Length: 407
Image (cartoon, rainbow, N blue to C red):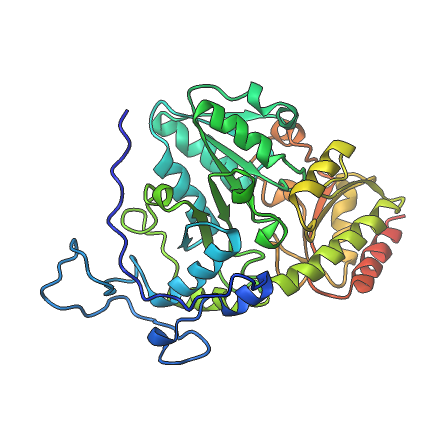
């Protein structure tokens, strides 16, 4: 089959201020979106809260507009600021922003697959992604094959010539398994498939899948990238030629609003500082919970085995702020435990400055059957924590006291 035609030629944009090659990640987060010529000298990027732009009558919508903006579904100066910062963070040629994480995921998968293709995915995935793969894609004649965690030991044995797309998360949701991205990338290349990695849990501060061989990296920017629980956004980063194949605006219309883009760009300035604290909170909480008698198992990147620990040490700079546990008291112990917590909001999202807790079996993965949950290592006793930026001793005390009361 022939490839779908590429999208329209990119508009010539006002150049961003160059950042010195020696600038570190935190410096790039602060300065990576500077564009004073367009921003009238404003230090904080302005919000271009407009749906459309004036352009000369001589310019048609299909012509090269020579740097002119046309319509905010297609491009907007405020959205481009956050886009540029994310592009630099992940080390990609291009980036795109969407109205939500699922907007990014759906647009990517639907743009890159067609009838007769096969998508291979690890079964440990976010529930919304599972729903898309199982409920929507088969309607278009796209085969989806979920493979168990054991496939991580030999991904080259599970991919086939008809495999066109491979979808991974690392660490996975909610069992926090670390996947060898470089090995999966080699296996995908061998059969001519594209590898997409959901990097939401790790963030580009802790892990850069493109540098490990992934073709595309996707984020629910709602989570760590935004980090304050006040916006919805999705992101996609990768090669310019590949992103031109993915409809982000013209057909699906999964566009990020300018005000949300402004909030995202503002939040990105503190991403490395927030993630540094969340990494430390995750380390301390995982260690404390592993010692508690009421906890049957701790899920934390690298804890499953020495092999997985070696992978995490090789491809991650930090382990993140996500920790899951299985309570010895079973499903009956979950609700009383949640009610005793004082610093954790019971909420289904993650990555925010405040700590959150949820039970995946009845939230993010509630649509799965008991058998499907069991195959993914999720039972009614599993609780997932998203650790914020609070003092680590306070979080440990809150969790410990709630577990102590469990008897």
